[in-house]
Length: 292
Image 1 (tube, rainbow, N blue to C red):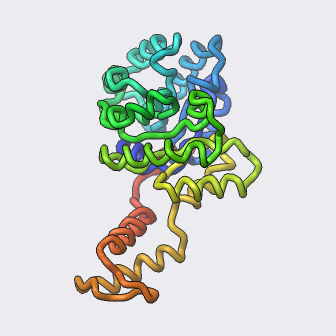
Image 2 (spheres, one colour):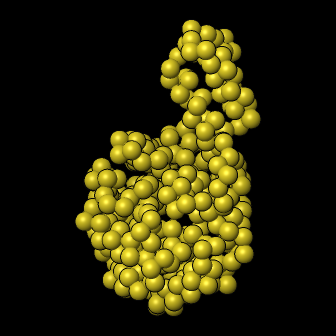
Image 3 (cartoon, rainbow, N blue to C red):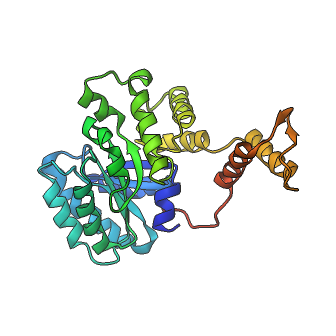
């Protein structure tokens, strides 16, 4: 799968701490759509230099088999300059699909990051994480900044920044705004934040259903056990695919004056059916994360 395709169609984004290189292969073997090697929250400040070294070594060792992302530190962090120096030191053609940029707020900073990434991989892409009041306030500029291919929601940090509860009601406006900004900027549907309940499948499934209903199409994951449920929750069900195919079959002659399941079919319904079938259609591409 190309870097661009990974950036725009990935459903599952799996984090693994950058200072735990013994977990990299195991995380890759879980086959997320995008593997995220983390240099930010999951890594203690004192461990970040070793984490950068470990990530670079793993990427270069696996070569073209791996197209992983790295979550760098945000532009206001003391670790940001070191992240940029590390990024610029990667050899051209390094197998780095892109970067997750936390606390994305400043389009100029995003442009700087995109330029540094381009030295390692000209096809690399940025996923900008909205997780602050400033980020949400300026989201339209973030969504159209150089190199940004998708938006994600850092709901936990966002709630802390605003001092609000981490509940659906409190975060509804932010989630809806991220979906709207993505659509206006011509980006793919955004990536929802993590579900911290690792062993409660019902909570995870409900979170995915809520995010999908609002217009999200992917999710940040913090454990391999979450991948299957997240992927299933965002993909159309067999019943939905059957409905979509019957809609297209019924309108194949070009007529919209037909009924499917007792309901009139019009242009928006046909477009919905097409998108649903396209989402589930096999691409024939290689997995974003190759098996070790």
